[in-house]
Image (tube, rainbow, N blue to C red; front, top):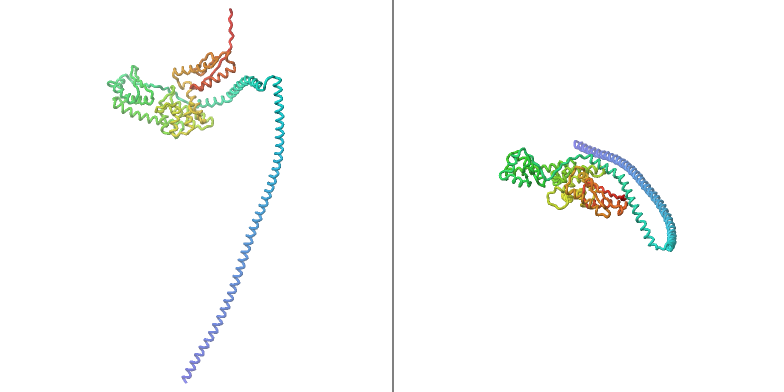
Length: 512
């Protein structure tokens, strides 16, 4: 019984388990079907959504492509329109050119016909001219060449007289118009320049307090004075001149060294050969330094910059050099100022003109022996110091040793003459002055028809007296011009010289 119950229970258990399994399986199948159905619905919805997105993107791309195509079509249309316009313009130009060519061809044909007509007329005129010449030769009894020579001879004198009168008129007109402006520039330039005048020569005077100092300077058996002369290269003259010792020498720098050395020796009181050599050497260094400082100061005062040290040293040496009694440094400074002012008045480079004016006489203080004129020596020195070509040319050409190549050169020449020719600026040696006056008179006397010549007004005017029977009025004009030209070519002189030709007729009778 218990076994039956157990079997029944086991059977019931297994039956329930099988039923539960069957029910669970059915439930899982239903759930799976539901999931599959949901998945299918989701997949279908996702597919529809993606299809819609693809359609939207396709439509968007289609619209963009259509827009690009439309833009390209518009550009192509515009390009076609431009090409059509250019073609129309070229066609019109081509038509115009064709029309002009036709006009030119017709004008060429007309001109060719006119040239032929003119040639025929010229031939006819030539025939008529020959016939008239032959008739005139027959009537006059002269050939054409003879008549031409007579006509030329008759016209020569008339043309010469008219030419001289025309020259006089032109010169008078030029003087009226140009002389006023030239005088204005020169006067303004001189008025705006203040100068000092220093007269130097080959002798310096050293003043002493008493004649006792002379003995100390001479020394025992003259050893002190010999040592001083050997150290300085200057001749020291101790004579009966009261309270003065004469220093003689052609080199002004040496004279200045000797003067300063003597002053220091006399002030110090110790005068013997060793001390003399020491003081002279020290003084020489001081003078060299002073020369350089003088050169720098002059350049700064004139506003000139960038000068070579060698040029500055030579400028300083000008302080101790004189020319015709005029201090060379003062003359060069004056010339530089004149050049700067005149260049400014004429609208040129005033700084370059100042530079050339300051350096124009620098060849006079070159220490090396050189047989060249001082203008060419100064030009060579400026070229070695790398000065600009126009500056070098102005230095070399201010006495016309070389040709002038810039507008600065004549300004330097003019201002040099202004500075040197002013009354009181220079003084000449009597012999050279007399020789210059005689040369003036001899040049005028060398011309035919000249009777007497007189150089007056310190050589500023040359009066020439000619014979009335040998020289006519027109010849007198030509003679004055020829004499002036020859004086310019052959002589060197300051300022200008007036040439006056005097022609007079005298009638002389005697009452008895």
